[in-house]
Structure formats: structure tokens, C-alpha cells
Amino acid sequence: MINSKWNLAMVGGFVLLGLVSLVLTLAVLAGRTGSTDTYYTVYANVSGLKFGSKVLFEGYPVGQVEEVEPYVQQGQMRFRVRMSVTEGWKIPSDSIARSTASGVLAPQTIEISAGSSPKALEPGATITAGGMGGLMSSVASVTGNIDELTEQALLPLLQNLNRQVTLLGTILQEDIRPLAQNSNKVMVAASRDVPTILGHLERVSARADRLLSPQRVEALGRTIDHADQTLLSLRNGSRQLEQAAPDVLVALRELRLTIESMSRRSEGVAQNLETSTRNLQEFSRQIRRSPGTLLRAPEPPREDGPPSELEKKP
Image 1 (cartoon, rainbow, N blue to C red):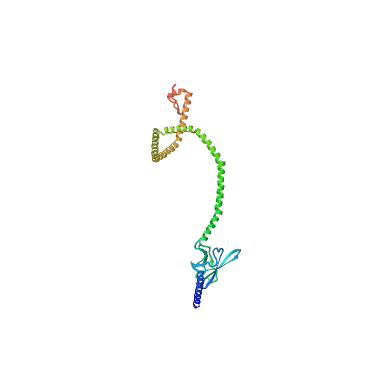
Image 2 (cartoon, rainbow, N blue to C red):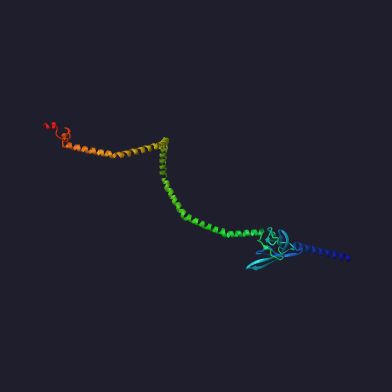
């Protein structure tokens, strides 16, 4: 009987010890092995957050989520998250609480990034909420951006491309085909004229060969040499003219003086010529009147007084 009671006591002790171990293990896993302080934060989206979600401070576990309470603020739904944090844990007033997940299969946690303020938040205060982080939120953000890009850019681009392709088909059908037909007609007409054109080209080529024969090229070279020599001679002549310019100026100055002197004497010469002309006219008049004047000498002019003896004689 004693052994039976002892065995029952042993079994009961083991069961009680197991229950105590289980309670302690659950308490350790839940992070509620001691006193805690309550803090709050507010999110617009609490995907993955629930009772028991871990609260980390710079990666160190300091508590857990106790409750997620929805409420309406300015017509929009908000979620107030109540967190229990290890009692006495100092959280700077400018800290940021973000909802993150370390991996694809990892549970959602609240990561508190420590601020730089020396002032700590009082228990019961609200920690400033940050944007959702983690791989899944990044994937969701990228997916949203891709959807927005598809709706706002890719679909209009495809529609515009479809319109342009349709327009191109219309142009090919209505414009390019007649143009190709006209081009075909032009090519056929040109093919008939090709022999004539080739004949003209051959004659032009033959004339060009004759024009550019070695003799013509040599003659052209000599002409260019002569032109160079002529230019050199002209340059030398110009230089000589420049050198003779002072002498020419002196000669022109002397010529001007001579002309001025002759102009001053021309009046006297003109008067003498006029007098001589008058005398000749008088002489010719007398000759016409009495041609014998040329054969006898003119009588000397008589002086006043009594006649001489010779004059008295008959």
C-alpha cells in the first residue's frame, strides 16, 4: 500500500513538474516572463501583425503585440497596436516603429529603430509609425508599381503602337502600292532609254579623254606657267611703277608749272598774232587794189617845208 502511494506521488510530482516546465516554456516563448510597459503605435495596414507578434528594438526582442484595435480617423480606417515592452526599457522620443518581415516565410514583427533624442518616451506613449518594411512589402510595392506602370504607360503605348501599325498598313495599301506601280513604269521607261544614255555617256567619256589627253594637259600646264610668269611680270611692273611714282609726281608738278607759265604768256602771243593777222589782211587788200605796189617801192613820206631843188625840176 505504501509503495502504491509512493508511486502515485512520484507520478503526480512528475506531472506537476511537467506542467510547471510547460508554463515556464510558454512564458519564455511569449516573452512575458516579467513586468512590462505598454506602448502604442498606429498603422494604416497591419498585414501579418497579431497577438504575440514580436517587438524588436534594433533587432533585440523586447516585447510582443498584445492587441490590434481598428478605429476610424478622418473617414479612413486606422489600426492601433498595443505593445508590451520590457519594463524600464528606454525608447527615445524620436524612435520609429516599422512593421517588417525578415524573410519570405518569416513572421511579421515590429522593428523599433532607436532615435537620437536624449528624452525617452513615457509608458503609454505612442511611437511614431514608419512605412512597412521587409521583403514582402518590397515585393508588394514593386508589384503595385508594375501594375501602375502597366496601366498608365504600357497599355497606352501598346494601343498607340497598334494605331501606328494600322496606319502604316493603310499607307502601304493606299500610297506605297501606287508609288511602286509608278516606279515600275518609270523603271520600264528608263530601261528603254538605257542604251541611248549609255551611248551619250560613252561619247562624253571619249570627249573627256580627248580633252584630258597628255598633250592637252601639258599645254594647260604651260599655260599655267605662262600665267604665273605674267603675274610675276605684272607684280614686278607694279613694283617699278611704285618706285617711279615719286619721279612721275615731280614731272607732273613741273609740267603744271610750265603750263601755268605758258598760260600767262599766251595772252601776249595772242595779241601779236591778232596784229600780224590784221597787217596781212591790210597788205592783201592793198595788193588786190593795186597789184603794182609789189613792183615799185612806195614813196617816202613827205616832210613839211619848201620843195627841194630836185622836186622843182620837171
